[in-house]
Length: 127
Image (cartoon, one colour):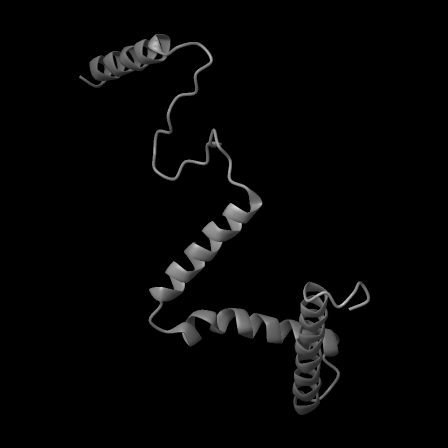
């Protein structure tokens, strides 16, 4: 029975493909297919779609702190590796230096944001 049904199914699929007009793309076979759309989104539309997805994801999150803990932990461990790659410092010194590196990183982000806001407000090219 397995051979008969597979022969029929294979024949049926071949007939469907033969009936489709030449050059016409077959429709996606499953939800979420990666097939290119006829009307691709603009960069602004892709950003908007991503923001919608992010807001939807966070609206459903019961514990935001727990959801972001692995990323925060990994970022801090990276800073620990940057300040003491050979593990020669004592643990308190490593932690203190990593916290300082973290604060410096956040200040760089704040400075870049400040410059960006200033440029956006017509503050000139030097920011």
